[in-house]
Length: 166
Image 1: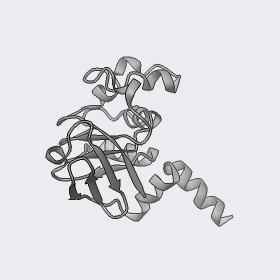
Image 2 (image 1 turned 135 degrees about the horizontal axis):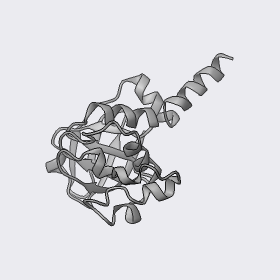
Image 3 (image 1 turned 135 degrees about the vertical axis):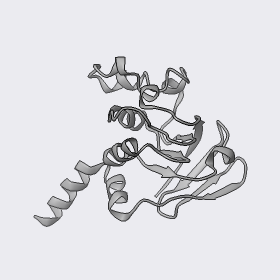
């Protein structure tokens, strides 16, 4: 399973209130809510991110509150994966549960610039920066979590499993 797209680079400690500010959590229209993703630090992000693009970040991505909407808006916008030096535990699990690939990759902050063409092989744990001809080894999700990603989230994986058992 590979994801390839443009890198949108962010720094360390990007909290969930940056990903989707709390004042927008009452919005029930997914398109409207997602249109505010990252607006605090990158006002153009939601309008310009393309399906398959990757969010690349430093340490502790998704820290702060446990809001599931942070992972939801990135997935809704079509972000192919979030690749970071490290993740806040709750964001990591929310993303996987929603089927948004998250990849820990040491050195990614230095190896990828904003706008670079990047490819991540989720099953092999390899990130390739096509623009800079750099390759990094990344963490691979355990099989049971990869099944959530492949299925589009934990609920879809459970439905698939129950259907196979019927």
